[in-house]
View (cartoon, rainbow, N blue to C red):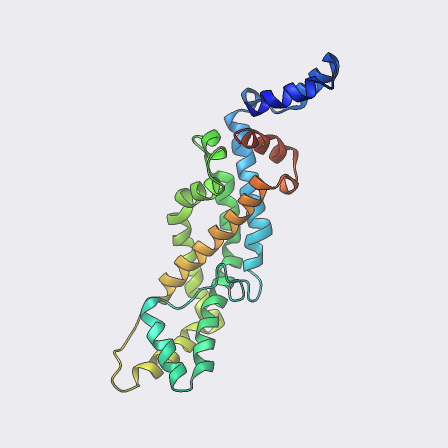
Length: 236
């Protein structure tokens, strides 16, 4: 309907030849196949990695980004509060920061895994994903890669903990807490927790770029993106 209204408006001002030229330049749904749509979706996800995920690999990429900052797991909230209450805020801050440092380091090491995953992803119904929600491609990527990427991220996070000294800092932090009278000892699996949080942060940043491409034509920086996402625009 929207397309018909546009044609009716321009018909009043253009001759037949000019009108035909306008029609030829408008995206035709039937001429865009599933393979081309899939190519556009992959390119959008690639841009999410290049423009947004790369920010997470920098110092404070997680720690100073409120959208993805990794906070303490629930079972350690009492550790943080208790340490601050007895004047050990610096130790608590360092413990929180080191979790985010490990995630930054892991994403830096594992970014090529995401790039390969996007290249190899198969969009069974690319058209429906294109015409879906603002993060439909990212959600599809999450479903298709989350388990595999967890297995890749987890050992990298573990190595990152050792590399940035998180294992020693948290061992010291938890030991100090467990030594406080009348507290219950805690020993959470921080590697699993930070792995999950790091993955969620990465997918969130990719979704951010996907939304930009879907809602802002200026973000469509290639012919494929312009052509494929113009089809999405027609649904509105």
